[in-house]
Image (cartoon, rainbow, N blue to C red):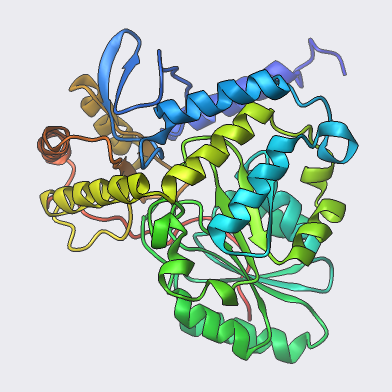
Length: 414
């Protein structure tokens, strides 16, 4: 193609960027100077950070740094190859074993990211002729992996047990030979609410389905020693595939799939994102293992208690009756208004991101406030004052918990 023609790549890209900007959806990168913590430096200004998923404040924990440096001395940095070639170092096996012990499953397998874990696992389990049933607010990685699998997709409205059962009944009747996989998150990343896991497990077992549960925002925060919502509900043994992250409350990087030993062996042989990816640096694996150790210790219990104390302190200040997680969204609605509100907060010294379409449904833009164990009482009270002042012109009532219909737009069952 002639690069100077009307169909040049730059013309296409610039036109697309203009369209994005006109809808108030333009995104830009803005680097932080220094570590991920409660107070961060951005463009030379100190800001109070209420946007991080580092819920326990482990990203800067000295024990993680010590573990990573010790592993550097033992194994170097780069792992050199995929895990099936020669990239499985002792630190990777030690991490997998630590995850399995923490999650109390027979086995676990670590991945380079949560996206890679989903994209490798779901298409390995399901394919053409199978049925995947997922919550409408499922994370993009779960949606993309489901689409990639080639399975027939059915979506139920968020946490709608009646529609979930309807889909399960339809799948069992119309596709009796198919594998049926139910996919949900335990804590939803943009609304911060929880899935009704007990009822979902009862339904999937009634209709002979399997359950894939993403515990990304629950691990470290909820359950005994931070094992997640399935543990808190006492139903972890009834969930076939548990996914979690090492890069949020555990303060490191990567993700995992936990379940039976056969599942681990199967994914080693079939999960393409695992097979064809260079394994993460050994120091990262060592830091992740140390983070799990801290999360499962009395120190972890203390950090969780401080986190939940902070959550309970902020929720009445935002007129929220009962927060279910460390994520407290403030619904704005209009995309441009959400960006403007976030910008006003930035001027006041608060880093609170505006979340817009396509991350959430059109017209349900919000500020996504996240709390950590490291926030001080004064930080939380200052944020509440700033939020009320900054959103007053956009809302007739105090900021409230968002409940969106959400993306993705996927087919529903007839």
